[in-house]
Image (cartoon, rainbow, N blue to C red; front, top):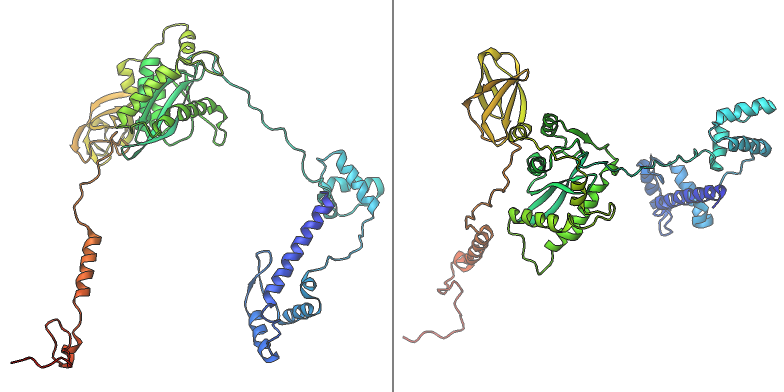
Amino acid sequence: MTAAEEEARRRAERARRVALFRYELIQDVIDTRLSTKQRGPLVRAIAAREHVGPFGETMRVSRQTIDRWCRWWRAGGFAALVPQPARVQPRTPAEVLELAAAVKRENLARTAAQVARILRVQSGWSPSERTLQRHFERLELSTPAPSVPAVFGRFEATRPNELWTGDALHGPVVAGHKTYLFAFIDDHSRAVMGHRFGFAEDTVRLAAALRPALASRGVPEGIYVDNGSAFVDSWLLRGCATLGIKLIHSTPGRPEGRGKIERFFRTVRDQFLVELSTSDTKPVADLAELNRWFTAWVETVYHVRVHSQTGVAPLSRWRDGLTHPVATPTPAQLREAFLWSAQRTVTRTATVSLHSNVYQVDPVLAGRRVELVFDPFDLTDVEVRYHDRSYGSATVFRLGRHAHPKARPEHPDPPPAPTGIDYLRLVDAAHHAQLGERVNYHALTGEPTNTDGAAPDTDSPEPTP
């Protein structure tokens, strides 16, 4: 379809919508059964209120316009309500517009103003810039040249433990609770460095997957993650800084760099999670069983199968690529990396507060901003640091909670014990009781009644003495 044909189609569609609006407005007025006396108040009522126009705008229509549309309808029907295109003779010579289009085609980056300048220099006269813009739009010359799409090269780390990629996957429902899988893979070998299913997609479950990986596979040079809430938590940045790991977050809206972990998750869904949903497989008993099954699948299936991209089994490629034994962090280094911290200002009474708890610290720190380092699951043991120097453990002055608000337990709370109260059954019983208490209308009129509340049968014979 040419530009002229497309423009004609758009104009015809707009005219049809206008005609439909006009007809909808006058359809009650043009009823032949109405008398002139009846039609007048109806027209005035239509003219007095606002209407939603054919293109969504709010508008009013005068009585004279409504009468004119009615006359058009009686004369030519619906076709008479369709606006006719204006017949205007072009004021700009066709040869000038053709020259302007040729100048534009030479360089699509030229604006209408620039084309007008060129025409004035060439022939001493030019149409207005707006005229040239409309002409270029009709010829589809106003669209800039398509830009070259961005091309992303295939990246792969040159050696094991150069870069780990981490992400989270929504897992199955276990014991009535949704599970989430945190996993880290080595970019060079695609081997799984650490993994853990948990009941929450939070920092604690992330640490449960990363900590064993660091203890057994060593410390990577960098970790590449997305911008999920668990991955942007300050704890992860502190842990990476403690162990000398470069933490890299992907650019929002540009997930291309996480293709390997996404491909691994696809394998998990197709080969592991699908087996959990088969009808002949017993449901997973608990989270420990799910993690045990997944570990067995990773070690006996995924790690030993030849990878389609590398041509080598993931675990073999990771081991063969190591030029020297991996240096694993000491238990003390791991503990330090997985501690949480918070900044607080010491009051004049040498106390600090942390999540509803109040602690007594060294009086020399009064008025100073200190760092409180703690295990999120045990707020009774808090270390106080100032300028990277330890001032010992804070003394608990008032303990409101034992764990950090984000440190939710691994196992969700069991459902509350049922009370045995069936509210709807009680309501139903009360309703039946109300229906049984019928009003004795004969008692209200003073007439004798039988023992069941009904009036006696007057046609029955008298009782025999």
